[in-house]
Image 1 (cartoon, rainbow, N blue to C red):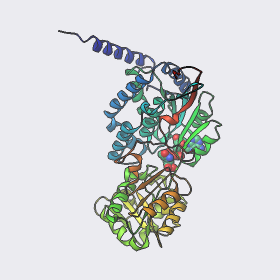
Image 2: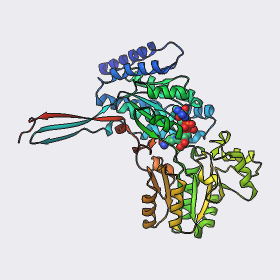
Image 3: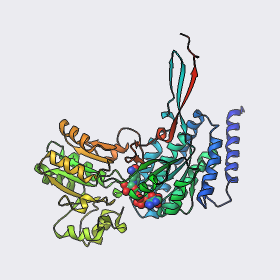
Image 4: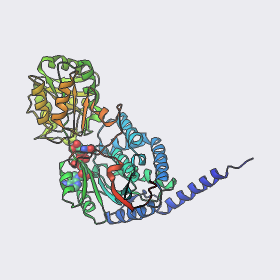
Length: 463
Ligand code: NAD
């Protein structure tokens, strides 16, 4: 029998790596999870130093294998998140996890640039920052870690995560899994670490630690504000309140289907999900019928105030209903319904909380505008200047152009569900850290690097 020596040596190398990985933690503990911020940073720094000697080609192979390993575990990743956070839909979480595993760009997007001239050669490369401090939301716990993790280590960095306290187990599970896959493929242990018991205090300690070179935060307004106070280079992905405008030229069946699919995706806890509809008066009633035909329940008369009292607390959502199924909300409000509606909507005035507040549940406001110009004006107001995500259904290119310019968001989707703009069932790569306050938009490995210029004077020219 002929022995494939290369294969044997590869298997032996893997076994050794696994044993090495096992040595770095005591039995029963989770790889990459540390009791405090200082030890999580220290371990990540050690990993970063070892990772520096691994070339770009190996980095690509490691990320490829990481994707393959994660793909096999999406069911577990999705169900642990639903169980722990009590938010979202299992089948949508599976789709979200697959999306970040498959469509987060890897090291292949890092391109060096070389310019030669009379005075020599100038090379610009994208170098790692070192150890990144990343704060993640409860709404996409494993997805944010996978998306940020792939992007950050593709850029040559190590990363310490501080999760939302209500998603700490999902985060630790994801980080343990990623570390095991990475170590097996020859990456240093603890390239991705976290604080086992994350709190707001540990988040602030992480962001301010001298060992952290870049701060990347994904969440609501409070964490964005805290990140700016860290005194570090910050990439901030904040809240949104994405409006959908529908005009009189739109394909209303398509709009109805897109609005229901988009606004109910993972029960609307994804930041890009449609949060309110602004319809031109001429087609408003027909659009409502299309939304109902696509599987939504329309609140009518006194039902609107009953549900408002239940799910809105001032201008904030009642946390009890964030990410819950539409049927749970309807039942809690004592409203009888048939089937299993994916979305609830209500025809309300523009200043209603269903329009103005980011509710993060499968319940959206619907309001009317005189014409397309007023609809766009209202959409810009409802978006509150977050510059996050907006969308429009129209066949009129002047209207689409007017809205794109006026709303000026990181993502603008035309004639599709907002998740299409996230790369889900749509073109382009994905990101779960859409940095509107700091301007990067859909973040990827390029944003997690810094430019380095290397100049050689008067050489490497033959003319
Ligand atoms: P959240 O703001 O409550 O928490 C986000 C993270 O920030 C958590 O880890 C939390 O512990 C931490 N945090 C909160 N307040 C902090 C403070 N004062 N100091 C330090 N850390 C703090 O958000 P959430 O409910 O977990 O997630 C939903 C929010 O995140 C929504 O507003 C949504 O739009 C936003 N989000 C944005 C993006 C994006 O890419 N722009 C992606 C996902 C979620």
